[in-house]
Structure formats: C-alpha cells, structure tokens
Image 1: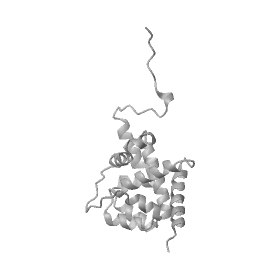
Image 2: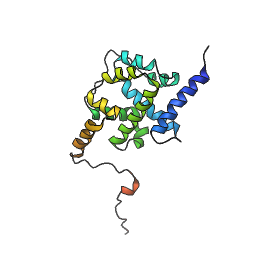
Image 3: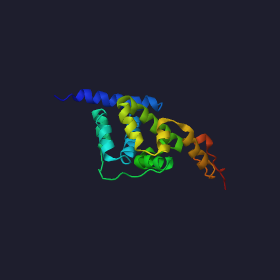
Image 4: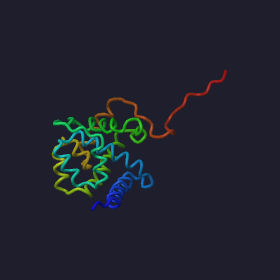
Length: 179
C-alpha cells in the first residue's frame, strides 16, 4: 500500500529543515529551489552508483527532486576546486536564483545547509561514501572545515575583483544632472 500523505510529510519536513538551516523558515519555496539546485549540482558530479545509493535513503519526494531531469551517464563532471562547484550550483540555479547567490559565501552557506539536512536523513556511512568521491577541498567546504575554504576566499580576494553589493545601501548612484 502506498502512503502518499507520509511521503508528502517527509518531503515537506526535509524542505522545512533546509529553510531553517538557511535562516528563512517562512520561505519553503526558496528552500525547495535551493535544495533542488544543490542536489542537482552534486548529482551531476557524483558517480552514478554513489548517487543511486544516496537516493535510496532520501525521502520519496526528495528522491523525485534529485532525479528530475537527470541524464545518467557513465562519467560524472569533474570538480577540481571550490570555485568549480560554486559555479556548478549557480548554473543549476540559473537566473531565477541569482538573487540568492550574491557572493560565493552565500553559495557555500546554502550547500552546507542542505548537507546538514542530508546528514539527518542519510546514514553516516553513506554520507562518508559520498564525501569520499569528492576532492578534499570540496569535502572541507561541505563539512564546514573552513581552512581550505578560507584559502579559496583569500586567493580570490587578492584578484582585485569588485564584489557585488550586498544591499542597495552599498550602491552609489551618480548625481542627477538637470538641464
């Protein structure tokens, strides 16, 4: 017998937990979108066997989110560093989530939040199997071991790139010239 109500409740609980971890408990739609983006970015970079083992432990509705649009291949896309994964998350989100990812630190916070919730729903052994397939610097980012992530930001902050403003109060508008 199928228990659709149970599946819905478990999926909604997962999304509510992501909303809480991202400090937006009132916005389950945003949490759903962020969860989808992070799971798809991971999925496309994990070996297929690892992905299948991971989703076997997810709530039914989160499984559906994970596999939505998935084109299973024999090879996964490689990740060399944190920047590659940050860009993968941004690509998955597209223009509809650009406002959620103003800077790289926000992307990392979302990835960590989704992984915190994954750890609650997936066995520790399976989480370790997933992490073992990732480069060390990416494992550090996901688990919050920040030394290597700090190094990433230090390297990128020395490249004289103007960061995007975090709010409109940081935007300087040119003076209005009247004729």
